[in-house]
Amino acid sequence: MRFSQASRAWAWRGFLSIVAANWMGVLMVLALGLWGLYRERTWITRYLREEVEQGILPESIYRDSRSLWRRGARRWGALLRGDLERWRRLGRIYRTTIELAFRKHQREALGEAHWESEIERLRQELKRWVRS
Image (cartoon, rainbow, N blue to C red; front, side):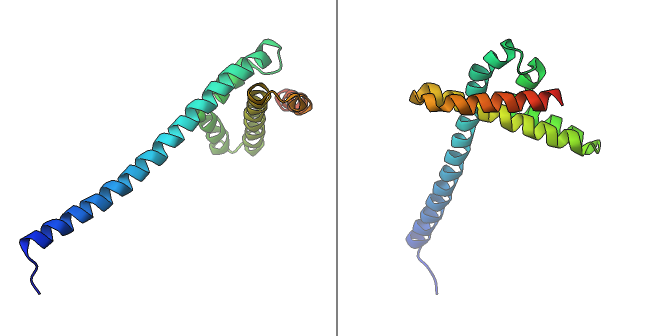
């Protein structure tokens, strides 16, 4: 069965439209992910500065917490050296710092004072992990 020149042209247009639509979806997901990382960094920078000034969070951990790449590099470095305890401890520290920043953001953005006890709990947990 032979197709006419016009039907082949329509088939190519349809194919290219599908490919373009798929790539637009991929680009949208990528853009959304980058925006999320930007917002995370903004909140960590803003809300954890106070913890550094109060002596709860060391400056080095604050700098590392602000960067997804630094957090990953520090943890992978510990893992590749075979230091599983440091790898676990860094994971807990970074999770706690990020959760603390997000809770402080929620408290400010939503005006919900009930986050105070959770924020204080996270501060105490962070102090324990940093000291150990």
